[in-house]
Image (cartoon, rainbow, N blue to C red):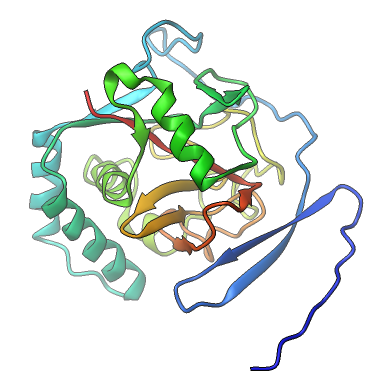
Length: 261
């Protein structure tokens, strides 16, 4: 196959990202640098304090055997009306078979200082790391609790549980996520990456439509969802793009961490 080399000059205040999709095609995006401060739109109850504490599970949600059973029972009644929904349901069915343990999953985007993860509202989201770097960063967060990068199964069980609990709909997750989050075409979108905890979506401030979610998958890594420069109809919450270069810096992606104990 004939190859071509193209030199692109990056406009001031912008950067390029390159990602791959399942069919092997690559997508080049031109994205504005996030230098602008965003407003904190989150509202917290008194028991949802946002200060960092010594409890490293504070910003994590436990997924129990009862939760997984609820998802399993819900799955038994679902067929999916289109390819997007059927694909999500298939992945969740695979996840329920694969995950037979309790775990805690982060419900806020992480921040990173000197390659150390911390969770606190109104901070910069930890981006500009490769998938391999996220693997190491995640392990070092709370080794006493077996912290690591979430896998796709764990993430999708949590997404399905939020549908079961009435916080999302299958249509929102699988087809069109434009109605909430920080997607470019969502209500109140800032068109730049927001601070951690900036807005709730599906009951939690985990940055849907703000940053891509980096997780592991069998044989590598995946980027899930969309970011502030994407339309929610093109990159809904359950959109999965496979990453084939673990050393490539992901400018607009953040890792999802889990704790196993």
